[in-house]
Length: 585
Image (cartoon, rainbow, N blue to C red):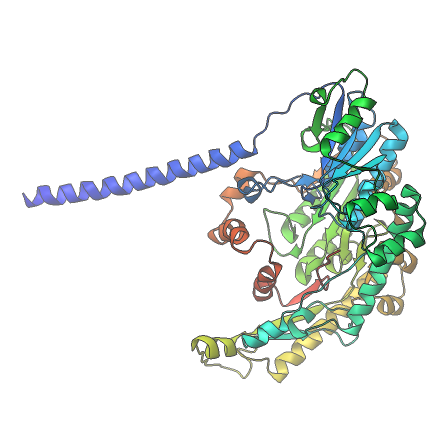
C-alpha cells in the first residue's frame, strides 16, 4: 500500500513536471508564431495610377528593422534607405503618378535626414515631372521645412504651423539628485570645457561654453534651411524671420495669409486634387496609395558590389541584436566587407552620438584595416559626433550634410556615488575590508579618493591626446590645430567642412558615387552590413533583462528619457566619448 502511495505521488509529480515543460514549450512556440504573424505581410503588386505615400508620423531608422517590441507595440520603423530607394525608383515607374507626404506633426527625423529627404524629393520632381503634395493636420518646424519642397501644401483649417525657428533644450537633474543624496563626479580634460556631456548631473543650467556652442550650431542650421524655404515659398528671408519672431503665421488662417501654405482643407481635398492630375482616374475611391514600406525596390545582387556598413545608434561594447553600434558586430561587418572579393568599395554610414571609448577604439582599428584593402568613404547622417567622429576620421573621404551634427572631439568620465542615498533614504549601509588603500577606489558606494580621482583625470587627459592624434593622422592635419577646434565642441557639417573635418557636403548618394569612382566601377549593387537579425533570432537571444527593457520599460516610462539616462549612468563604462546632450528642435 505504501509503495503504491509513493508511486502515485511520484507519477503525479512527474506528470505535473512533464505538463509544465510541455506547456512552456507550446507557449514559446505560440509566442514565436504570434510575433512572426505580426511581422508577416503579403506584398501586393503596384497598380496603375498609384501614388507613393510617405507617412511622416512613422519613426525613421537608417535601415528597416523589425524588432520584437516594434511588433508588440505597433512601433514599426521605416528604413531611410528604403524611402530613398522608393523615391528613386518612383521617378521612372510609370505606375507611380506622384508622391504624397502626410501627417507631419509627429515627424521625428533629424535635420540632416530631413535635408537629404528633401533633396531626394526635389530631384524626383525635376527628373520625373510628377507631383509632390503635402498634407498635415499641423506641421512641426522640421516637417514644414520638408513640406516646402511640395508643389502644394495643405493644412487642416483648425491646424497650425509651428514656424518658430530652432531651439535646443537641455535637461538638468542635479537638483533632483541632490534631494536623493546622489552625487556624480564628472571628470574631463582641463581643455574640454565644450564637452558638456554629464553636466546634466552636476549643474542645473547650461555652462557658458555649452550655451555658446549650441547657439552657434542652431544658427548654422537655421541659416541653412531658411533660404531654401524662402526660395520655395517666394517669401523673403527677413519676412520669414519676422513671422517666426512674432508667431505671426502659427494659426491656420495666418499661415495661409502669409503664404506658408497653399490650401486650408482636409485630406480628401488633397486627394481630389490628385484626381484632377491623373488621367483615367475619375474619383477619390479609384486612387491607389502605396506606402514606401510596401513598394518593392529590391534589386538583384549580382556582379560588383559596394558595401554599405550602417553604424546607427550609441557606440557600445560587445554584441547586440537591436539598433546600436556594437563593437563586435561592427568589427565583423567591416572585416567581412573588406575581405569579400565582390565588394569593390565600402561606404560607412554613420549616424551616432558616440559612446563607449573601448568600443570606439575597436571599431576604428577595423576601419583602418578595411581602408588598407579598399576605398572607404564615410557618409554622415544626423549625427557623427565624438566616438561617432572617431570611427569616421580615418576614411579616405568624408561626406556630411550641411546640417549634420559632428565634431565633439573630446572625452569624459562619470562616476556616481549612491552610498549616502542608500544610508539616508532606506537605512542601507556598506562596510569593506581591503588589502590595499584603494582596493575599493571605484566603488559607487563612497566618494572618489584623491588617488582615484587623479587616476581618472590622467585617464581622460591621455585619451584626449590619443583622440586628437587619431583625428590629426586620419585627416592629415596638425595636432595642435585639431586641439584648437576640438575640446569637445560640436559643429554642423557646413562648419566642419570649413574646418577640414569633412571633405564635401551631400547625402549617401554622393558617398556612393565617390566610392564607385575610387573603385573604378560604374555599375554595381549595394550589399548591406551588418546583417539585420531576424525577429526570431532576437527572441532567442533576448535575456530576461532584455525583455524587461524592451517590453516593460516602454509601458512604464513612455517617453520620459531621464529614466534611461539614469540607467545608462549606472551601467555605462566610466570613460565615454559621446555627444554632450540630446537635441530637441
